[in-house]
Image 1 (cartoon, rainbow, N blue to C red):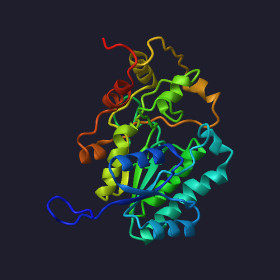
Image 2 (image 1 turned 60 degrees about the vertical axis):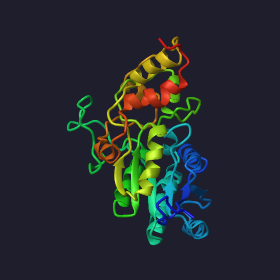
Image 3 (image 1 turned 180 degrees about the vertical axis):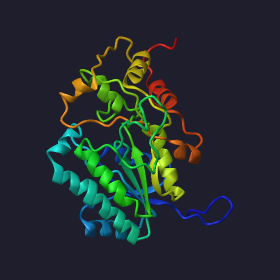
Length: 300
């Protein structure tokens, strides 16, 4: 089994995936099916070490993927009033899984967040200067981001972990309420700030390839460049609904209707681009992977 065309033995991949009920976890399973990669969803709780060890013993995976975690429903404000639950999954759980994987000699692909930075004097909005992988997080405005920054710092010590900093994830499924485009299209008012974002249709297959290459360390897992809320909604109007309208408001006005501040930043994606030269810029990827496949307006 798994013999390559030239006759040499290639080890067949087998992925153990945590986060079956989540958005990214569900998409990973579909990608594995499409690529004919053997995969199993973990049944253990991340914070329960024995249950993770039992999963690994029964599945015998070549790689482990962690797409489980607490982001809050309907948004990260939930974490502000559920701090222990957030710590249990995002900190204790993630560290336990990383530790078990290290003990078993397994690479862990960990879907993390890039919402641990905010524009500052060294990385001004609109400058094109993005935060790099080695930069220290400077945004702890929300409890969610605070826990994610803590765990990223600790995971640096685990040489078996590949930390992928995802931001404002977008997919071609415009009916999904977790999709950043769907979210902002439904908001009563939106801010208008350029940000780094992650097009899942393009980047999730890349994460599977990263596992195959046994890449580890921290990676800014976003498409190169930035795009603003208004630029996305203008594309939405052009490709989906020509009658679509929206109203902007300022960060100060937004602060009155949310509990925790939100992160706005540009991440430098040059490390990922160097490993995967085919990676599209955020605006090109939005058009190619999201808006063109969903086009409802007539082609001009």
